[in-house]
Length: 306
Image 1 (tube, one colour):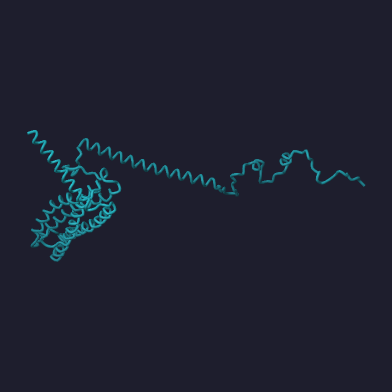
Image 2 (cartoon, helix red, strand yellow; image 1 turned 90 degrees about the vertical axis):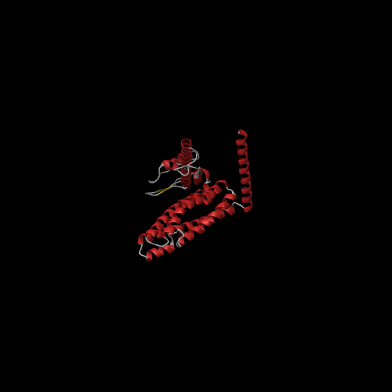
């Protein structure tokens, strides 16, 4: 019977002087892991399967930052493009003023300077631009109304001659008065933000709205190729003249209701800005005094030279 070592104990079965790192290195690796994988940093772990790799949260945050930077770059590029366009427009306008003079309207015989992009605040440019196109539409309406009245004369209507003559007068008087009495005032109102110009617009554009709706009705001997005269032409079998009256009637209604819509819009802006009738009266008085002072100064300068 072999003698039992009295100093043998399970707690001391391993060598206490053996290197622990060496022991770890001697651990056998299975078929799915390598020494490099055991030693890699696991702070940014990736979950792997046989086909896909799923990025962790830090990668998603980095992608979001890149997208935000790309969006910021696109926004800055758009702002730069808009500024370049404004600079080019200003340069073109400066070149035109240097070569042709400051006045630019009307183009065939410039009498005044008018530029919506240069003089009207950007927030109100669309409103003033639409009102300008409504004024241009009025010129088209007046011309078409005159042609329809001329065909009414050729169709043999008893009031055709009167209608044509009055319609011809409208082409000159309404064109000039509409520009001076309501379009130019609303242009100056948005440019200078003065109550006086708003009141000019409210009064005379109100008359224009009523006049447009009245012309759309087309009573005989009023210079209007509107609804009543249109019905008479169709009843008499005058198709061409009747068709022109249809277009004239539609355009007069567009003038009336289109201006009514923007009349209300301008009125809302007027109230929001806090304009009052007292301000308008004070501005009219101040303008009259200033004009009188200018006239007196000019008269004194002229007489002193004599």
